Length: 241
Image (tube, rainbow, N blue to C red; front, side, top):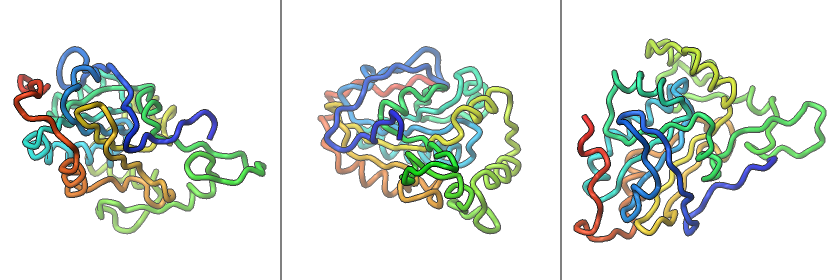
């Protein structure tokens, strides 16, 4: 698994971060969120149609989470200029942060697949030491939009065409450098402690792009201890159109 750290688990302290925002000017940091619980999802770049769909799902449940005092944050593996252009035409209430180098993905232990050489005698341990054969054999249809389960790369191509999403130079660069990045969701309580963790496809590549459902996220958020609403700072996006 090289130098990859394992995903943070409930009880761990959430690492600090400060990242540029895609749907407002400036940056948002861990300190800006301190004192209230928040959901933070770490995604691949905009080239991933399943990640775009999950951000739409988070937007749909954001009012319910905010009503319970939980902020919603999505970190996308996309340069901020590209992300701002995309979300200018597809606005979302979710706080969108950009990390084109996946530094925060790494800090929270969200894995990226590393493929073993064909001649390696190392025992595969998906995703930390996977074989190319494992990946090539994967077939997915997590949203039911495909005519049948397809290889993840083929699925991406079909859904991007369906969405009329054309990868630009920035998207292609991110895909080239971070194509095997997995997705992770974390709930952080008001004290900055991880309360819930969900990592994509830990049981194998056939589970790629299967993300937590709205019901699962809302149920997990409901289990977090919360400070009284009067003690929470104001919501980050109240003034963002």
